[in-house]
Image (cartoon, rainbow, N blue to C red; front, side, top):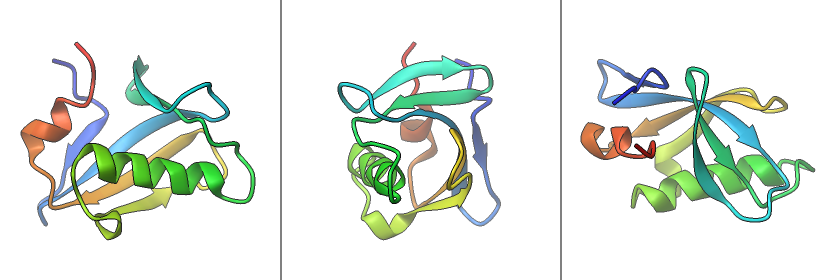
Length: 98
């Protein structure tokens, strides 16, 4: 399984490299986009709504509290880096469809 989009950190957190497609018909993980995990978001890219929806989607998918997921970079870009605290590495790696 290719997990080039996932970096496990020494402090127990993980960094996800994501490619975001806002304004999609539904929110879902759409596979890989180069070295990034592609996520389609139903939220529009207006006033931070897509970023908030992204963080909530990742937290819900991993059964983590919203405070465990933070946007590290890419607030106004389709290319984003998201930090996840306290997630199981095996569960993180399983986010990408095979």
